[in-house]
Length: 288
Image (cartoon, rainbow, N blue to C red):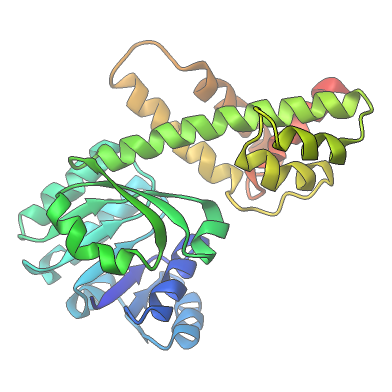
């Protein structure tokens, strides 16, 4: 399918590269023109000067932006330039209610919307190995799947519009808990003067092993926090989870609340653009 990408941050740019390699990418749009120029040159595609211009050229439009309001702005901008065959795939992480709003806007124009948040971080985006959680019409997903296969290695249909985003919220809460557990445990081990490289190696092969420990354990111990997933973005996502929780219950979820407080401290200290493993900084300080 003729595909365009709106939003060329770390995730969107890598999606564009993989779409180009598979022969699907036609055009890209990014608010910072120099970024679009760089990706277009690398991928051999055109640059759209507006989201509307991009929509006119594409059968499949992939949106990859940061905030709920950005998603709705893009949807409202392109709606009149879509048609009955247009499929809009939003890979951003937003509230499930935002996904429902976006779908309703496009439905008025007879276009199709899929909420398709992804997990796997920058590494997954680079390797075309993202996990994609899909909400919307399953028949529309099947039309888009051959193209989406170039950016995601595991695409799972969840259910009605909004369910993809709700599933991503599950993922983000779980990631927060894993981050809390791994950083705290490694700070404890370090305080016990253990040979931490060996600790990471052996624990990674046992019942407590997990992706985060395997891929971030040794880098955080070395004081390196190159972002695979920026701390400030996870804070944004957890704020969305907090909002979704309040819509169904008066009771707060402790992992969300605690991690938001910890991330805010790190952001206030200037670490928002580091990887979420920078939480290790706080855990070390607590045990020093």
